Length: 140
Image (cartoon, rainbow, N blue to C red; front, side, top):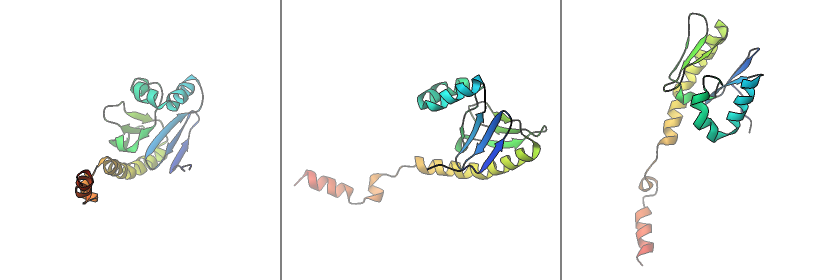
């Protein structure tokens, strides 16, 4: 199933796509684009070399990892990510404001969803008879 982006900003050198859970920044041409495509096609490589290559190649950022999105004095969008290099997108002022507003709306929701996925319930909370069934079958 293909996801539709919430916001798409098409610039001459790159495309920014905002989805419900991820922000994608994709280059359009050049050697950096080929490197980006290679890194993004190999998940293990993205996890190991992604941090080292983040200064050269823009990477997709999960919204749950973003601390804040603000528009600076120049009209550029600055996305703060803990333990990573901040992403600065050279957009026009109205595009930056629109994207920052939508990001700040979606970031808390993405963080909540991530916490809910991480939360694990002990087996006895949703299957109260688990222990009695397990012990009954083990000891006839």
